[in-house]
Length: 224
Image (cartoon, rainbow, N blue to C red; front, side, top):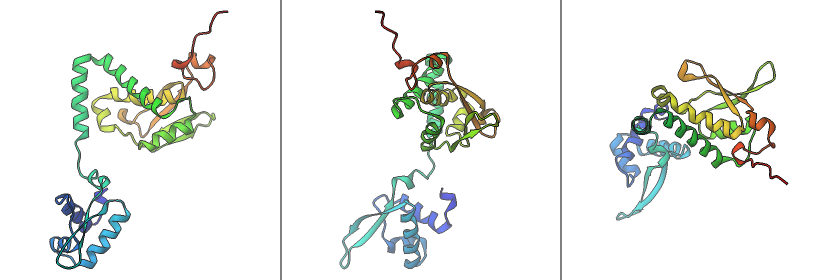
């Protein structure tokens, strides 16, 4: 996101990053060697975009100075190493529990994420809503046969999945649990595809069981 900003706005955000308690318009104008009017205009734009907020006021001998500081959203635009930490963790866990147990763990995490979002089985349109909230940039696509597919244009774990393809098991379990079905991963960006394409395929359990009940929630019939 920072790359889409002008040089002065990037410099302004960098200055605020180094002054967590906030900076005044005069201080920013002096550090960036631009006019106070220009600083005001840039701050207004950055406030509108949710990158800067007004902090405390600082007393002076005259009128108190308004301080500006970064929002949490702005701080997240600077480089983070979540990818590196996640990759190291996956390597360590795989070494401790083995690859098969790691795949089971990923599926368990995907199911938990799904159950945190829905208590019942939902359709593809609702699944896409949940995926888009997580940044997948997905949509429901209907093939010529009329069968719906879920197409994701952004793999939110792409770099991690390139190093550890087992991460895709989380996606499959998330989608499958939300939809109460098995999932065919017919195209995958990690495997060279242009998108990630998923198709729900009702399992034997859900094909004969009560509608809108997850397989894990079905109960055995009681004998009379």
